[in-house]
Length: 391
Image 1: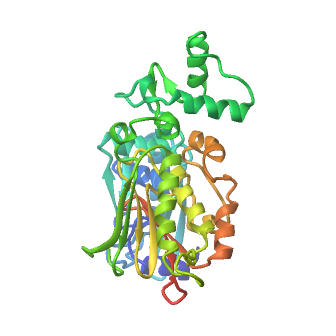
Image 2: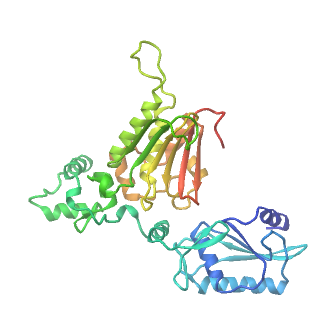
Image 3: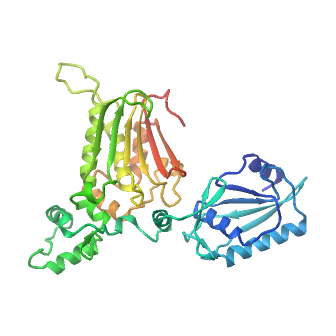
């Protein structure tokens, strides 16, 4: 990085990827700053720059000490130990030390007091709720929401007949009978991570469960067809709360979208089917991806909002495993819910190889994604005309 690029970066100001530090002194509190960046995609600390973006500069001796001390803190006061890079950039106003903190490969990280930190804009924030901590462990592939047992469930909440039909179709073999070979049958369910110790897992309920509106009340779709273009509108054409297994949610969600999609009268008689405004493959790909890849640690619903100029599908959770919007558009896929995704090709219209989004974009290029890190939500928008589409 040269002075010109450095000044361009500083000109952008502080945010969740850039932090300015005026003083050359470095203390143990910096461990929390390193932890927050490592847990949230990485970033840079610019030492020798004040909060207003003015370069105050360091001497060569100060710059050397800053780099050494930061490396020491990252290794000794971050758990697990973390490696950073530091570079001294000479400018007309003095040296600026740029501390490069990569996105952590062994998340989640904490400081030497066992405190977990995440970024909150340009500042850091302590993780306090168990749910948020669970999501941090999930981001490091150390915990999976889909494998968690639903404490209030029992084997009576598992649809055994549906599972048996699925199993015998998929594997072309008979299941051990529940009555005659109960232990073998239970072991099969446990090996597939659908049940554990007499309780049903989140995946087990989502795929083959009963009473989901009671056991997993947030795992649903809220669908609204608004009048106008604003969410604040108090008028709508249609509204549905869609619950059930993923298959049931997919089928009813597609039904809701198809009713809107076929509202335009086709040519011919009064009873002639309506014309599709948006190709069905668009809804198929986007809805099934929302159901499979949403963050099931977040207790909230998928939102399907239809407006006059667009359709939004809002999924709880950020993009998983450092996935970016550009990668999505190129067909890159990374699963958050590996178990659910492994069953999906046999239960849903899902291929799981990342090609669906590419095909959808070819058919309907007016698609945009927003990965909202602050709200922990991914929003995909289907724009209904090129004039309203945004890049």
